[in-house]
Amino acid sequence: MGGVLEGLRVLDFTRVIAGSWCTMYLSDMGAEVLKVESPGTGDVMRLQTPVRNGECGFFIIYNRGKKSITLDLKKDEAKQLVRELVKSCDVLVENFSPGTMKELGLDYDAMRKINPKLVYASISGYGQYGPKADLPSYDVCIQAVCGLMSMNGYRGQDPLRIGMSATDFMAGTVTALAIMGALWNIRKTGKGQYIDISLFDCGLTMLENAVPKYSWTGEVAAALGSRHPSAAPHNVYKTKDGFIVIITIENKAYARLCKAMGVPELVEDPRFSEVSGRLRNVDELDAIVNSWTGKLPTARVVEALKAANLAYGVVRDVRENVEDEHSKVRNMMPTVVQPRAGPVTIPGCPIHYSETEIAPLRPAPLLGEHTEEIVTRILKYPKERYAELQKKGVF
Image 1 (cartoon, helix red, strand yellow):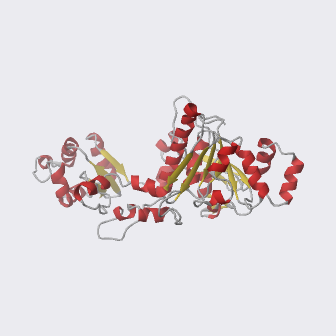
Image 2 (cartoon, rainbow, N blue to C red; image 1 turned 45 degrees about the vertical axis):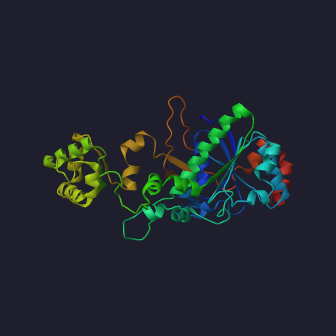
Image 3 (cartoon, rainbow, N blue to C red; image 1 turned 60 degrees about the vertical axis):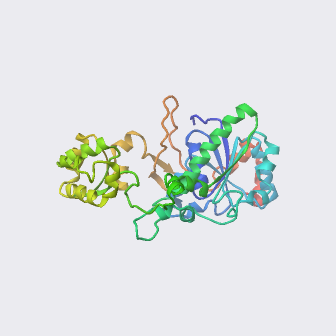
């Protein structure tokens, strides 16, 4: 398998996105991830669209390369199997509602008695403690509560969800980072530890400069669309055949843009010569930029911006990125072959090491595909005992 985490074993009790996103990265980096699912149904993401031949695109992305074991955690025999698996695992990740693992007798206090070096991470909506800890939640709920939706969209319009599961992805990534830190810390202490990550906390970090601005001025950040509170121009502009993002941060970049647009006199225009003025007069400035871009095809705008060494981004869709040469060269649109769905293109792993290659992405597992392998190879149960537990409905 290879990878920087080769030899690391992860017991994965995650569902939906945040937790699965975390263990996806651990798997991409070479860890052996054992995904525990409920018999019959499994992770609810298996049921989300798009689906081909019973396999879901969402599930394939978040669970590529993992091994699936089904366990009915209501049965004592299943819990005993978990306790035995924990002995050989380095990491456990779960994103049940707070208190669920304790009710099952599989919480951190119970598991560390079995394996003192275990790193145990819990991901939840609001964390394991606090007034909101017991509230059910999903990413869109957290985007609303933490303030992200109030800052997304356009002034005067309804709050708007960021167009993907932003706090799920942030929480999953932060958890993977926290796990790396805890594993490193074992070198110093010889002990594992518990990690508590919440989508809400991660969402608050994404408010960035809106927080100190409120602290200093009492001003509440409003939705700005594609504009920025500290830079102008900073927006999406229409061309003759599409849209393009143009951004300048410094006065020097603004001056280069003016020359590229053929209006060098605007460099010294008192309305726009400093960032503060450009922000005050942003409507006028955006109108000037739009007037320039709107007369030209995108390729001509890009040519002018490139020549001026300015930051830009042509607005593209999924099809263009799947077929993009840069994406392919960086292996960011690989194809995996699923047991039932066949070949499917998915977003790749964005980590590129100089000395250690990321192993080619492997397919996501079918429900319970590796149950027998895990029970007989890792736990070394005789096949007769496995068959006996299977008859009892443990799997």
